[in-house]
Image (cartoon, rainbow, N blue to C red; front, top):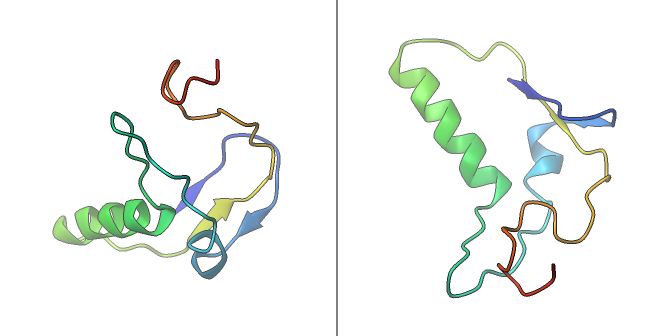
Length: 76
């Protein structure tokens, strides 16, 4: 399983699950990388498909506020 959104460094599951999940707010609830990966893997297994390989993007190109809806933290 691979996901690459921009040029960066690929890492394995052991590394990506250690990326900190930001604190949520009353209206915004971030989901840990490991939880998303586990849910996708479970859906794949439920279809009797196999994950043959996996790699994840750890480019470090995330800016403050990326993935946060406008007004989600009052930062934009």
